[in-house]
Image (cartoon, rainbow, N blue to C red; front, side, top):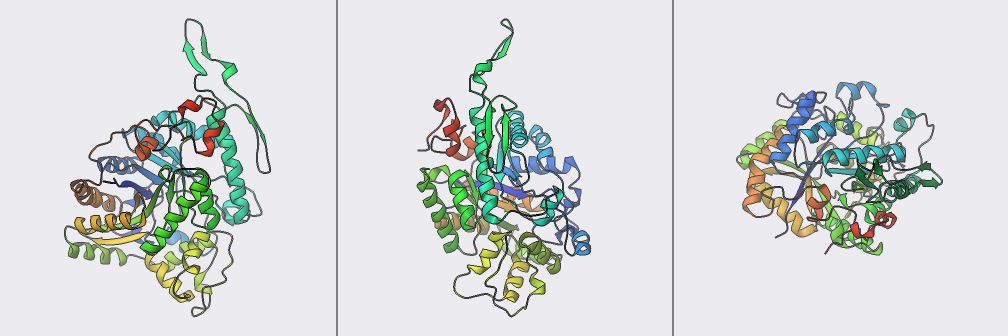
Length: 459
C-alpha cells in the first residue's frame, strides 16, 4: 500500500495563509521571534513523524499599501529560516528541513557552502527549494533597478544549478579525505578540483568549501506551476509542489510533470509530488465546522488581496470588477495568475477572482471534519491524482499541527498509509528508500560526479 509523505509548510512570520489569523487568541505565531517556539513546532512535527518542515522564504519589503501591510503583518516582518535550522536539527533526531534560496539573489558559491554545512550538521536532513524569484522590492534590496523577465530568471536558475552541481558533485572526489594523523595528511589535494565557470550570469573560480556532505547535493524542491516552471521541475526537482482547484486539474499537472521528466531521461519514481493541505480537524465534523467559522471570523479580505498583489504585481481592487480576468500581463507570480486565466469552463471576472482568492488565498486542498473525514479526503486525492503527499498549511500555530498529529496521524496509521516510525536517516532516503542517499544516475547533477558508483537507480 502506498505510504503518504507529509511535510508542513511555514514561513517565519506572524501571519501566513489566513491573513488576519495572527490576531486569533489561540494563535501563537507572534512568537515567531523566539527560538523555543520553532523548537516546539519541530518536536511536534517529529512526534507526528512528518518527513520535513518546509520553510518558504523571499526577499523584499512592503511597497504598496504600507499601512495595511504593517498593520495586518502581511508576510512582514520575517526572519531568515536558514539560520534557525541548525538549532531545530539539534533539538530533533529525524525530522528533515527544506528551505528556500533563490538563484535570483544568491551567489552560487556561498549558497552551496551554506547547504553543505547544513547537510553535514544535520546528517543529511536538508532540502533546497529552488525558486526563480522576481519582484521589484526584492531587486531593490540588492541595488538592482530591474527585474529579469520570467524566462530569463529560469535561464539564470539553470546556470546557477550547473555551477552548484559542479561544486557539490565535481569539486571533491568522495575519497579526497582520508585523514591520517600519523602521516599528517587530512585531504589529498589531487582529488580536490578547481571549478572554473564563466557564463552569462555567473563567474566562479573555486574549489568547494568543504568535503562531500552525506547527500552531496541537498534534495531539490521546486514549486513553479507555469509552463517553464514545470519544465525546470521535471529536469531538476526531486520534490515538487503543485496546486490545482480540482482533482482532474491536479491529475493533469502530475501527468504532465512526469511526462516531461521522462523526456529528460528521468524515471517517474524519481519525483515525489506534493500538494497543499489545509485541514481543520475536530473531534467531530460539527466541532471542525465551528473551528473553521471561528478562524474565518479573524480573516481580512483587504489583507488577503494585498498578498495577491505582492505575489503577482496585480492590484485586483483597482480593476473593473465585472471585467473578464483575461489578457493579464505580469512577470511575477505566474502560477497565481494562471490558476485563474487557465480556468476551465468559463472566463472568470475580476470580482470572482477576488472572491475566490479572499476565500482560499494560496491554500491547496481545504478539508474540514473529523480524522476519518480528513483521512478519506487525503486518500481520495492520492488515489485519483497520483500525488505522493501533502504539505500541511497552518491556520493557527501550533494548534493546526497539534490537531493533525493528535487525530489524523493515528487514523492514517490505522489504515496502513503512514509510517509508524522513522526508518531512514537522510531526507533523500526517506523519500526514495534506504540506501538512496545521493542523486540518482539519471539526474543531471549526477553527471558531474567523479565516482559514479555512488549513484542510485530508482526501481
